[in-house]
Amino acid sequence: METDTTTQTPLVHMSQVNKFFGDNHVLQDIDLTVMPGEVVVLIGPSGSGKSTLCRTINRLETIDSGTVEVDGKPLPAEGRQLAELRSNVGMVFQHFNLFAHLTVLQNITLGPTKVRRLSKGDADKRARALLDRVGLADKANAYPAQLSGGQQQRVAIARGLAMDPKLMMFDEPTSALDPEMINEVLDVMQDLAREGMTMVVVTHEMGFARRAAHKVVFMADGQIVEVAPPADFFDNPQTERAQDFLSKVL
Ligand code: ADP
Ligand code: MG
Image 1 (cartoon, rainbow, N blue to C red):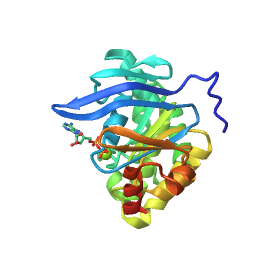
Image 2: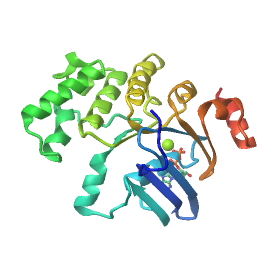
Image 3: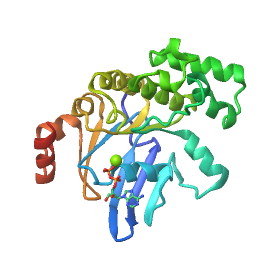
């Protein structure tokens, strides 16, 4: 999809964002724009601030200065507007965070029935369609413990999509998976990307970044060090820090 940067409102616009944990300056003058339909892959060493950056976007973390706008609106502090923001931003974490006592179908329909006020019938129908999309149509009545890690993570993606979010964020969604399950999750994410979903993805899967990203954002020590299309970033990193990082992970 072509992103028309002249007329469209960015889905995420971060400007001069700073965040401290005590003395630790974990986000330093962060500027980041994510346009509708864009797939942004965040990479960088452990501790560089990738998760914190993601968490500021749906206000799981507060910021100390700067601005974060989602879909043209500044981040609300609390209340109904915050709930609405969160429902527009789907988030998939390293650990699947499914509710163990609910079936797969119930995990997916919980948000839509409680927050979106969908009827149970409509929510079920939608959930089944999403399960089909992530290749798990036959697992609607299973409990999370009966699924493999890769299957649980695909349920978590379906659950995120069930809220009909404008943006999906993934924070190392395959890092806790056995190697043979990584691709089944990346494939679902790549399909989503192809279908035009706006995505922010933190990952160490450089193959995925190369294939799916429109833009690679390289972070180190709380700063955005490089932003480039994947081919440029991987074949011709501009900074020593990026070169050093790539020499360790590629
Ligand atoms: P990454 O996701 O790139 O590994 P994080 O965003 O998790 O990095 O962490 C960035 C820095 O912030 C690290 O130094 C980490 O120790 C620190 N940090 C993260 N979360 C917290 C927290 N809740 N309290 C204090 N320090 C934190
Ligand atoms: Mg992290």
